[in-house]
Length: 451
Figure 1 (tube, helix red, strand yellow):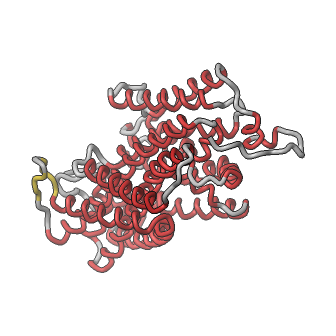
Figure 2 (cartoon, rainbow, N blue to C red):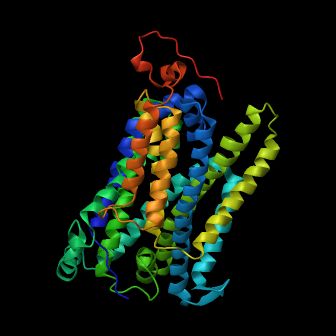
Figure 3 (cartoon, one colour):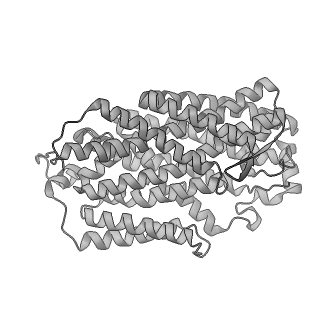
């Protein structure tokens, strides 16, 4: 089966690297300062204090869990594809029927292996184990990517030969819009999804609360950009360069199969084992982080907070058991969806990204930088924006070639402004905490009472 990949995706990937600066630079420092003052552990804690609304905080928590499930589903698909490619390269492909659905036997095995490892690891290891794995997986990813890059350049006869081949046989891959295959509208939409709007991704925001000092933040901005740039730009570039090495993909596969197939079919067995481990560990690490955040939103932000509001005693042992059960349940749901993948991974990921951004982008950006932002504006923006985003996407209503994120973000902004201007202003004590620079020096700043 012939396959095509536009070079424009490399340009899109670059925005993910540039997004590190706005996430950390625009909101990071303020997120860290506020988080310490209110003893926040999750982004929902910050929302609850800023807007003084349990309804808004709980709505945000539910939305976070739903769209995190979409992202985890995409990661499960990626891990299963990697495993399937490795096994297929050694033993060939077989197919089985599960609940009446035909699927790749190797994909099914990979899915369950990833599921067992992730759920057990996350439920038992907790945040510390996930954080350590993030660091280790980044190192393995860079090493594995280096092995693949060396092999592609060697088999392709060097960069000059590879680029000459692509220019002659697939010139569209050297054009920003891939010869018209990627519209300018879609390009702009992707710059929004994986660029500026990543400010609203809670999985990025929550990490900002762990900085010890401004110096740590500035270092993270530099090192994070370098490391993310190497991984994100590198892997996308390898996908393009591999077009000169892999002329056809195995039947029944999509472009998700490019890098795994390249690894197992072109590298010696030992090196292939090392290289294939890299993206597999990265997928498991990502799922673990999201799974932990999702279960935390349900247990801590909703259940435990509800008990504390009622003045009931919080049994930590019971909380621990509920957390493990919730983690396992969410993992099972994501696996069930990924068993029959709805589309290629990138679009599942983009849908989840869009939902999270529609939920949290204006909530944090306006909440941190606009004094008139209040709970009514945030709530109607969150509900209306997410509804518009999901409805337009489900109904496949075209928006002049743009991704439906422009609808969700646009509707959310309008509703946020209208709702905030037409409703009761935020309590002055909250404003002093979040906007101390707008008050005279020496103004007493108190932490608002928990609601």
